[in-house]
Amino acid sequence: MSTFEEEIIRHCSPTLAGIKTGNLFSYSFDDHDQLINQITNWNNTLNARGVYFERLKTNRNRVLLYVYRKNRLNRDLSCPKVERFLNKIGYPTGDLESCLAFLSERIHDSADFPHEIGLFLSYPFEDVEGFIQNEGKNCKHCGYWKVYCNANEKIKLFSKYKKCATKYYQCLLKGSSIIRLTVAA
Image (cartoon, rainbow, N blue to C red):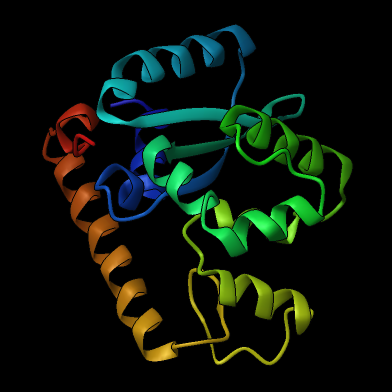
């Protein structure tokens, strides 16, 4: 098991399990070409199961990776209120690759994360909207994201994500492969 595989499991288990649209993680690397080969290999291996790897930002020796399920992301972003919201801030909705390229540009151009990134990570629209309107304050609960609506429901969901990550990590340590742990779309 490589460090890269371990990081994928630590940060992306809910996506691999098919219970979340996407996850982000930052990864340190020494060799850029080796990193590109790893990402290409994982895409070649997991795309057939509906999971994709996208580099959103690369610095000298660090990359921000977005691991996502394409079918779920298309569904999430085609929700009318999400589509209207993203259109208002300049996203070219209707084309997933263009949306991801625009998100990457926004990450590069901003000192802070663009708040709409939550929409790419299965955060409910109401919580993303609540975060923006409240400037990150006055949330009802803070877990994987700041919750502004239906806190009890989100607390249960956070518990599900945590159990998934713990179980997947245990399976990895016992020798299960990421391919075996990735639920097909």
